[in-house]
Length: 266
Image (cartoon, rainbow, N blue to C red):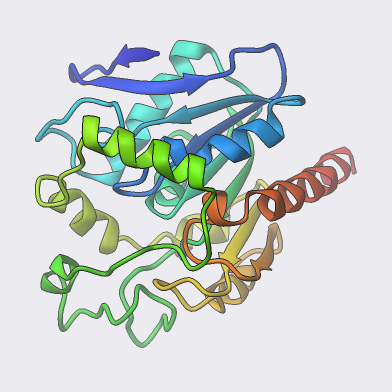
């Protein structure tokens, strides 16, 4: 399914379209919605599951417009409004999590029930205040460092059928990192710690223990920012938790949501 944003860009989304509690998932930069298919199957009996292809990714339109996290947050806000979504459990992998934090900062939490962050710290650049950024990225090598080929995002085997579907989609709808480079730059320079410190809603952080991009200890540092942040390290897993360990991700989120229900009732 597609919708058109207020700046005229066509965005694609997948929707199981059932009258159930809502999950909205957002892939990371360059990521494929096809990598969420196993997770969607796990959740679909109890949840309406929606996956948004960010602009310039998946089956969404390629454009020079809006290569910034704030525009991605606006796109999400327009999807929420179009589908009249409320009480949303929002899941973001990598830059998808940053999109959720930007949305929270700009639009508040009235449409959200909880946030789930898949392997994304609130700050990408290493400095004296934050030691858990992206690989070796620092202010000394930013932004040129972001042009390096960082290799595979995953650590363990991904389901063959799902991987094949992702490859097929990539051929039909190729992603061009060079054309979306400004978005990566904008993503990399953000610092969302202030948003997380003031957050009044629950959030779960799942960190891949073997992530090639981030030291999983970032999750423990995030937990210190706000008592509403819960964390779990997923073993035998890289950066693409939704594809590498879908069952572990599903179980962690279900357990978290049980705690959320108890927390909101108390």
